[in-house]
Structure formats: C-alpha cells, structure tokens
Length: 224
Image (cartoon, rainbow, N blue to C red; front, side, top):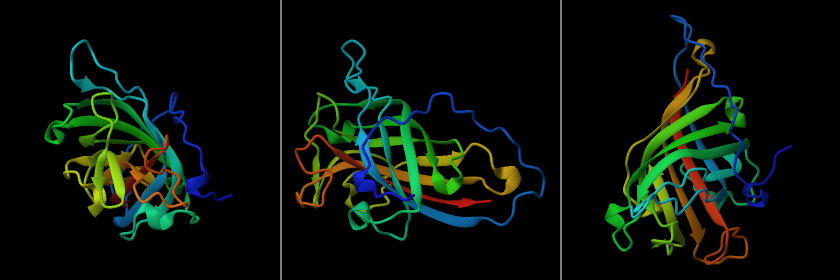
C-alpha cells in the first residue's frame, strides 16, 4: 500500500546486517543503459551530532537518517509532492561522515559522507553513496540554518540539482551493490538537502522552528 511521505514518522533506518550482493557482470549481460531519475522526500533524523573529538571542530554525524517516499523526478521539488502518492518508499542512512563546523564561516562547512540506502523501485537492493558535504548547520557550533527562498537549509551534500539549495555543488556518486548480471545495476549522481519550510504553511511537516527536518534527495543516473 502506497503511503504519503509527509505522514511518515522519521526514524533511523535499520541498516545493520545488510548483505551486499557481490554478483559480477558477465560479458554482454548488461543491456543498453536506461536513464532513471528519482526524487526522495521524507523526514530526517539527525544522528550522532556533536560528535567532536577533543577540541576538534569536526563533527561526525554518523547515523543520521531519512525515510519517506520516492517519486519519478522531472525537475520538481518535495514541496510540490507534499501529500502526493509516490512510487514506493526509501531508506537513507549516513554510516560514516566528517564535516567542519566553523560557526559563521559557511565556506568552511565542508566534509564527506558515506551512505547506505534502499528504494522499493530498485527492489530494495542494498545501495551505497558517497560524496562531499557542502553545508552543515546541525551541531551546537551552528544550528541556525541558512535562509534560501522559502526554505531554511541545515545541510546539503553532493550535486546542487535543486536551485534552492543555496549551497555549492560538489561530488556525489551512488550505485546499487550488484544487479549488473541481470541488467539491474543503477548508478549515477546524487544531491541532498536537509531543511525546514520558512513559509510556515499549514501543510508543512517541517515548519521553521519546529523539531522536524525535511529531507530531499535527487538521484540522476542509469540502469543496465
């Protein structure tokens, strides 16, 4: 049964114990690449924030996660999909990360992240992503967020596919672990943001100043 992403409770994704497929691709087994683009919309749960080592200004927010709905991406954003039925659900969990948290210096809010995720539309194959964090305001060093149109941006990573990220674009790659032998290997680039809605509309599950954060992920790639 399909659900609506705005009604799904945010909770850490239970990714421990996932067995990564290791099937190799046989020569000539993969067909012509098919372009696939997906929009991920859900609620976001900060994980192990304020995970500083000694006097270091680097945070390691491992365990941050999101759950929600997946939509075919055609250039829209999650605001336009609020309350709409998607094509299935997803899980997204940051397994390892580090990011600089120099308060008042957004140019230094940089780091890296490693992610595990699943999507119904890919048969819930174990998948991984890694990229650069380009904005981060989720620690005690800086938790005010950055205004960006009707959004307040608290974190961003990977490619700035959505124009309302107000964050630099950088590296973000993903792929399913396996599937090449059957033509089901999905790989490409991604971009994510964590935000609240600054317009405080009654439909928003993540109003400015609330305890909720929204998550938007855009995956652009191909399957073969």
